[in-house]
Image (cartoon, rainbow, N blue to C red; front, side, top):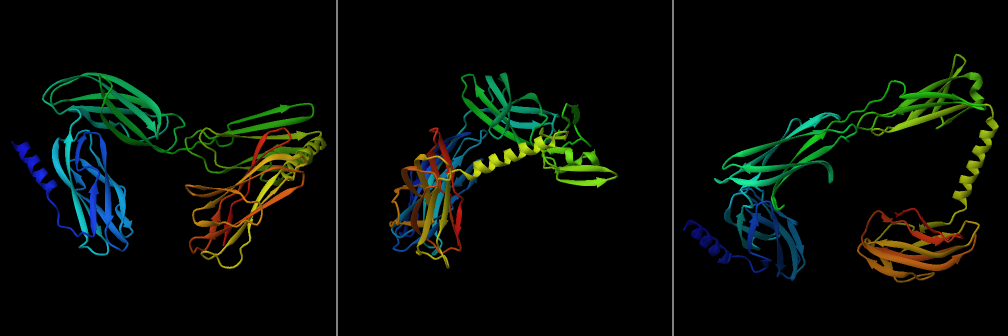
Amino acid sequence: MKTTAVFLVAFLALSSVAIADNSVNVTLSSSNIILKSGDTQSINITVTNNQATDDTFSLSIFPSYLQGITTSLTHSSLFIKGASQGTATLYFSAPFDVDQFVSIFSVTARSFSNQNIQASKDILLQSVRRSPVYVSDIKLSSYSINPLETITINTKLTNLDSREYNNYVLTTFVKSGDNILERFDTNVSKVGPKSSVDVTNSYDVAKYAAPRDYIVQSLLKDSLGALLSASDVHYKVNAIYKLPEQYTKKTTSIGFVSATTTVTVMNDGNVASPGFYVTESVLGIAEKLFSSTPSPTYTNSTLGNIVYSWYIPPLQPGQSVIIEYRISLIPIWITLVGILIAVYIAFVYTFQPAVVKSHRHYGRLAKEREIPVIIDVKNKSIHEIKDIVVVDHVPQLAQLVDKFDTLKPRVKKTADGVQLVWKFDSLKPREERVMTYRIKPLLDASELHLPHARASYSNRKKQKKLISSRKIVVK
């Protein structure tokens, strides 16, 4: 009888028509929800602005929290043009231990410009418990821990019913974000009436576990694999770094033409180390015969010796750095090899196709003022390139002007702007092709950022290559 009365009151509340200004209407995709424990459901809200002028409306839900049921709106306010509509989504979420009840939630849209302009709609919500047995608590032996230590995980299952329930599977995960680090599966044969069962597991923290928050999550399923309950807690791995006082390992090998010394330094902690210096001392007479990888940061002379120092940037956990230096009897060979390497690198970077993006805008950046944009594709290599495709992008803050001084591109609208594509068959060595287009800013701004242009081509070996220009800023 009591339940019938509650439903009657709810029905009368939903059937009543709130006194509201006709300037705004609220409609719902559903006015009745059955929400299971552990579930989230949504309702689409449509707000209609019947005024001739634009207006902004606040959205609110009352109550926003009730007996464990939480609510959230995708938008707390909507700007709606005159005689138009705006939409938002309302979410209801229930924990796994929620009680069964029926209640009414009210959605209200109210004008910011005139508080008398408002409209409301009611939602009848009925919460239903998925299972009387649920994960009621997770406790850890420590919530702040160091690498190589052990965490004890205690998960408690509680039965809210006066009957005994059998055959459950409790799965506990240790996670870093979405990555599962460890999994524990426990069969729970029974949970007595109005009682609890504790399940304990242990997890060893890895040596190089990153210093961040981690998640312990427990999932309770029935014998058929249906999820009944879930809960989680967080713990933090502390940040430590360990560097040796001098070096981790040092070896020296003597060959026919050189003596080579290798120094290895490792960070044995779980967080990046600060930058530091490694120093080595060599006889002064060997200065001209000295070489190293990497090169020393600086050198000092002291008591007839040369002291070389290398700056080591921060090392990640488990990362090591190797410094190798040689006292060579054939320094000229090393010099020649270095010259050849430098020439090769210069040749590779100098004689490669390139894309250069620029603009010709002078004076103040203003709305609707045209900005010429130039894309120059240069074949600086010594071979012909073919099948060239150039792609550029006009961002949403700018409008493409349908006027092209050179080759007209294929224009395609995208979700974040306009894409421009040029294609041409080939470019001979030292030949270049210039494409231009014009844009206009849609807003007055101090500067406009334009993305890099990209180009693909086939080299003489018919290999597909990609190149890109720099991003540019129009001020």
